[in-house]
Image (cartoon, rainbow over all chains, first blue to last red):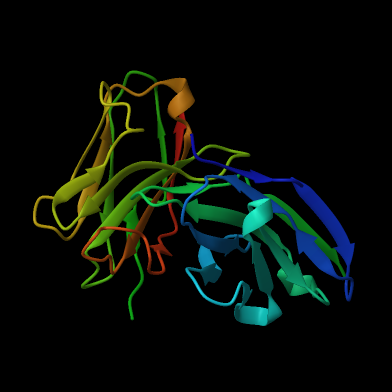
Amino acid sequence: AQSVSQHNHHVILSEAASLELGCNYSYGGTVNLFWYVQYPGQHLQLLLKYFSGDPLVKGIKGFEAEFIKSKFSFNLRKPSVQWSDTAEYFCAVNAGGFKTIFGAGTRLFVKA
Amino acid sequence: EAGVAQSPRYKIIEKRQSVAFWCNPISGHATLYWYQQILGQGPKLLIQFQNNGVVDDSQLPKDRFSAERLKGVDSTLKIQPAKLEDSAVYLCASSQGSRTGRMNTEAFFGQGTRLTVV
């Protein structure tokens, strides 16, 4: 069955530190990949998405993600985090069907 | 553009009672989703509509949950009777959709309804 794993449930960083959040999925076929963010008290918003083409995808607010097909991974990165990046981040995968599966989420706390 | 509207924002009910949630998607969006998000977990798709037809309801507990989107616009999700384990945030999302129904466009989420069953 299709599944999504996010490696870290909680991450604490200082401002200006680099960020990488891991996401792995289990499905061998064509996938659409997403990262969503939920800021405190707000609704889920799309950070970036990958459908095809360049496996390095750039999203909003300086985030990027790299699709590595051989590793079934879609890790999220940001070179220098800010306090305002404190949020919960969800990886999601749509694997050829109609259903999009979400990971359990990673809570990021950035210390000012 | 107006976002996805959900009501109510919060609901507390006793077990075995019934409850209904309402969602109004972004105008023109053909695809509507209901997700359940239990504390500490990611959103789980309950049901997906394409216009007024059901595309996927494989994870909807049909003995107690029901959903409809009669006119292909707004939607209601009902739980009857509720159980303690139904306590969660119920998220509605919509997207423009596509001919195949795949979620290949951005999904816009509402604020959610936080349900507590006591």
